[in-house]
Figure 1 (cartoon, one colour):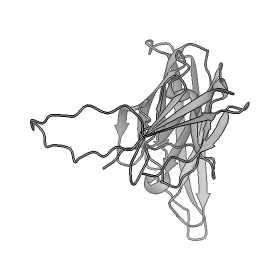
Figure 2 (cartoon, one colour):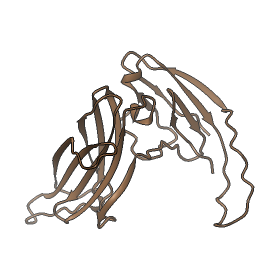
Figure 3 (tube, rainbow, N blue to C red):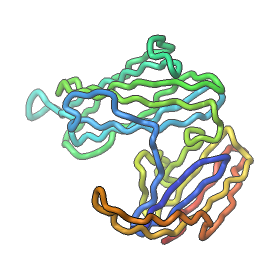
Figure 4 (cartoon, helix red, strand yellow):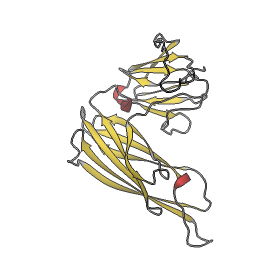
Length: 244
């Protein structure tokens, strides 16, 4: 298979080729503890729009959220609670901020969809934080806690760039997109700066079995294509990843 890779470093965007999907790494989230972990799996994406603020976008699928109703004439309802605690990085005893958000959803017919929203945090420039978010289905009594590392000490890390689907303006939470998707890239901190898109069309063999002795070839870092895009004065640009 071929792999698409988006990597941010000194306002450089690197792409690697894939025939079916394109990856946008989101390695900043790790599960800390959970009960009934198969029932809830919220996804988060971090973006720093300014020197003193951070947005945490969240998405929760309704697939495993419990919807109930009083009778056949009443709508189905679900209740979720998101509770976050913000700590200085390296000090998990001092809580800087703590907030609880309640999500109430009401539908006539149960259909699969995503519940989305934004948590807006006050964060200082050049500092790092640890964010713990607990997501709880109040009706099912299932919860999961995730840790998110908020990095503001390095202005060219992934969290200073927001990647969205240019049609519906939803953030790209997962590590893949459809081949035909046009993306909007936003970085208000880096407005009017150039972005270098380096595209790698690479094929990878099926992974070798465990403990197999193989000679791994070094990755060839010379890109197949290089595209330069300039962010406008709002810190935005759009692009469509190259076809494999």
